[in-house]
Image 1 (cartoon, helix red, strand yellow):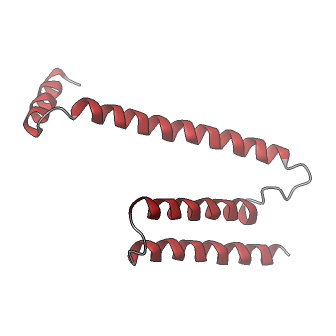
Image 2 (image 1 turned 90 degrees about the vertical axis):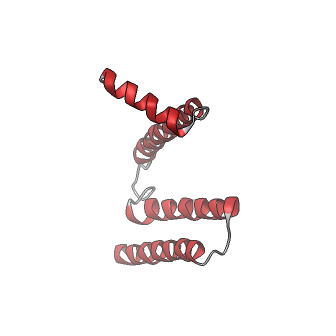
Image 3 (image 1 turned 90 degrees about the horizontal axis):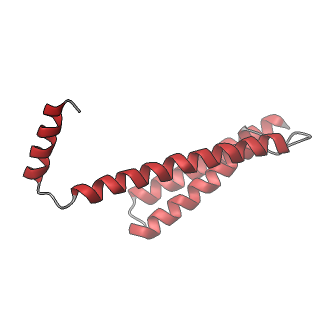
Length: 114
């Protein structure tokens, strides 16, 4: 039974990966539609990986694995959202400068030792 689950998981992961690849390379959709489709495929891929390879929910007391997974997902969300927030803030603060002004600013900061 375990080999069968691994084969199902492998084939499912392979099909989802190929679907995402062909969506992007064949320009089937564009813009926000493509991002939403790829996000949905990624979510399904994550579920397949968790169920078939990490065996989430197969043990007698799956609460421990589920709790550690939820904690890990929370930390991941904090890191990703925090990184996007910081990059957006940096981008917003540098947008009113011309490229020459940005170069001069970077040179002065480099001379200060930062």
